[in-house]
Amino acid sequence: MKKAFITGVAGQDGSYLSEYLLKKGYEVHGLVRRNSVPENQSSRLDFINKNFHTHYGDLLDEGGLNKLISELMPDEIYNLAAQSHVRISFDIPQFTAKTNAIGVLNMLEAFRLNAPNARFYQASSSEMFGISVDSDGFQRETTPFIPVSPYGCAKVFGFNISNNYKKAYNLHIVNGILFNHESPRRGSNFVTNKVVKTAVEIKMGLRKRLELGNMDSYRDWGHSKDYVRAMHMILNNDKPDNYVVATGKTFSVREMVEYVFGKLNLDFNKYVFQNPKYLRPEELPYLKGDSSKLRNNFDWKPEYTFETMLDEMIVFWNNELG
Ligand code: G4F
Image (cartoon, rainbow, N blue to C red; front, side):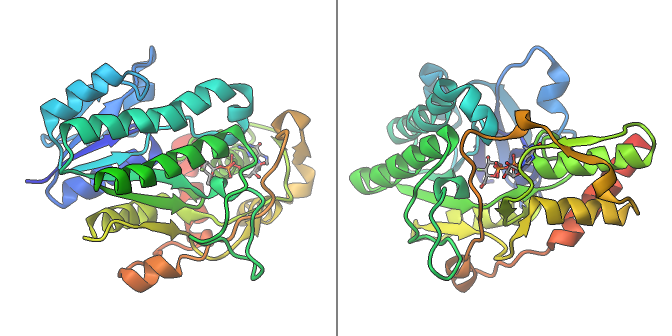
């Protein structure tokens, strides 16, 4: 039985990845940051079975990471934990940099010193590209990074240090450069789930308005379930390498809002307003990923479309709130 260790296990991707690996027969161990509201730690983990175990810890607690990895001796390590909200990274830049940059280094050291024969997946992000776009309108593995947020800057460090460790110490380390990915399990302060949840509340008469920031940015939105499959494939290839994971299609926030409200037979112009508090000091205006490298090397393509992903989220909130 293969053993996986996942940091950020209580998050959207951590929970879907755990389910995916448990189905494949893995023993799964997850790192959970202690929170005073226990439901916040376990709400996405209700699939718990006998091969699933959680451990308290934090990416900034090197001693704890060393202890856990030396005790567990996992075959696969997925470093998904992060301060994952881009706008909030402007409010807490030092904490974001510590967690998303030094936290990666702490994990790499715990892995290198205790379980160097394991394989290590680093959750890198399309936010690293920032304002950089190739002339054909795509971002890909060779596109330079020009990050525009403390989050993006810290993720670039995580990407660079993991590549450095791979070469310097001959370790099996891979990066998935994931574009935005959503699901009913997405935190409701990210734009897709905020829009879907609030639109359903408006439809039910529970709310009157939706306040957003910039509606003119474009994102390449996929589904988290499709993307955790890619994580596993990338890590299990014998040649460690870095891959973009994306749908190759881009939509503006406004188009996404229009689709969701339209599905609920609502005219979004009547309900959606801009609130400057949701604007960012610097915005990433446009993302569209070219995942040809991944698609040419592996049997991967997304099962969800932009529309089926949002439809699933609408059904979820209708059931949850209904
Ligand atoms: O949903 P978002 O907060 O996602 P963002 O900033 O693109 O970051 C996500 O994707 C990254 C991958 O590129 C990940 F690395 C990162 O961890 C995270 O998962 O915002 C999407 C867009 C932005 O342009 C934002 O300005 O929606 C715009 N937006 C407009 N109004 C809003 C809002 N975003 C949020 N969160 N809340 C709003 O009210």
